[in-house]
Picture: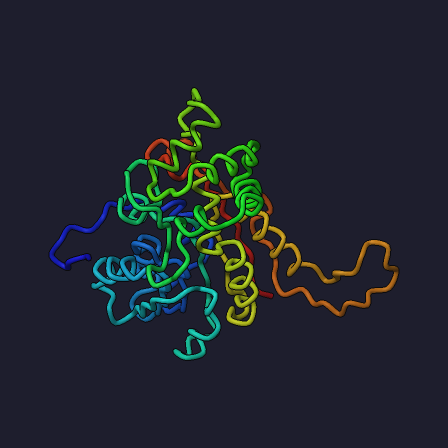
Length: 312
């Protein structure tokens, strides 16, 4: 639990100035931070939109909401924090009458606090129960997947979400080693297959990432949430997404390209019949990445990619 008298967790927001500039955050604007986390991006947005702007912050992790509320207490009149999944973005905004908005931000993936809190079971750096849930009220855990899913389904998850080449052997070793209850036990099982690699990246990294994505339905939820942003953005409102995984970035890129197109008919179609009307303009033709200086000061930013689109 987070106490208001405790020091807040250390947090370095990734691509902070690029994200806030990309949103075109300005005084009096209305903005949504769909992944408020520890409040780093939200604080920078609030500083820009004060004194008359408003921010809606959403996060499925109740502990993140507590930390963000403490961090953003100086802006309490301007910020509304909601503990919910961003798949419910449209319903949340309608309930609060928070639309149209000037900008929507997604900072995807796992937060520093989640990684560094051993009992959350996100990381093999700590020996802890296998969990990996963003929302502790959710039923499905990484332990459930590892111990009850078929070998074929485990292999699919590790290949598709982790992009791990030796997915079949890893899935086979997991099934043969059941029951598996701790992070260190799972990490060791993966390491038995891949061996200790001579890189900074632990051999279990991709498998752990794949399980986390599966536990939290991250890719499916991202698709659902992105679809809801179009009707919430006002004219020239900005959509900014920071992703950390190639599959996330692909979903974002394809969504923006599709919504920026005036026709979705197959290439061989002579006359457009789809009736699609472009709703977005892509602002960042090239993906925006952290500078070497940012990566040096915050190594967790190294895989970040930022994309920007604007509502037509």
